Image (cartoon, rainbow, N blue to C red; front, side):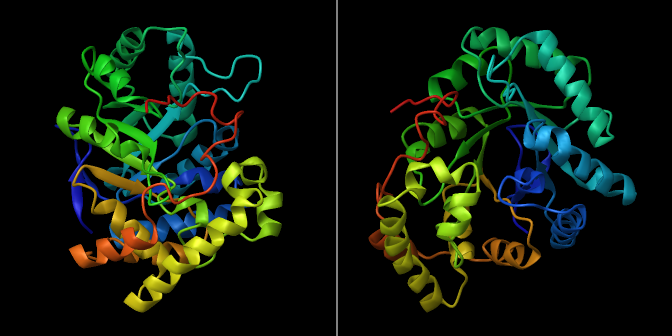
Length: 330
């Protein structure tokens, strides 16, 4: 397993992590047994980064991870553990970066996870009623109190990252980044590299489009996120399937699972780029892990770019409602 660092001076971490949103049932039900099997395989494969959030299943994802850690003595010492807060899920106030609120959130997360501190604590969504410098100051105080070893931001603009970093070192920025979503290349990838922050790429296989088993129309209609997402509604869905069929054919020609090629592409974007796919299926996890073993040649990348050029995806990555919170910067 290739290793990188979490932040400029942070701990060594596998350049592949597991995103634990799938444990909360976001894309179909996930049992504790399924989730623990995924974590066991990650541990066996040398994956040392687990990413979760208090929003995922209203704490269920954290509880599942906490039980897994409790049942496996020594596992906590091997893991670089991240969680997030600030995205409330409350329609009355969806985003909250108040100092007292964030501290209450991290205290609750620590209890559910069964640890004294987390390695990384993110602002899940920036609340613009606060100056980002003040939010960074809140994060710095949580580090000073020993509740987190490092801090990060999610779905923010490069300019916001720079302002926050001037107040408190930002170890990581989480953003959607894949062959289907390449906006981070317009400043965020570069800013993270310059400041020594790790770019943690969620949805690196395009929410299934870049796999050999993309969501079916029946699944799309069932999942809360996809049934209203522009890329999964017609006619965009059928068009995106047809385009990515060519990617699946290319991966098959390479003798690799499509998901593996998609993960390898993300890792190839820079030593500071760390994909965190999510799954509740160990067979799919093996395909994702295969991507950490691939070394794409320049010819491979050129062939991929010819099939999936920048901007190929039909439909915005979020609906109007889903865009509430993430910062657009280009």
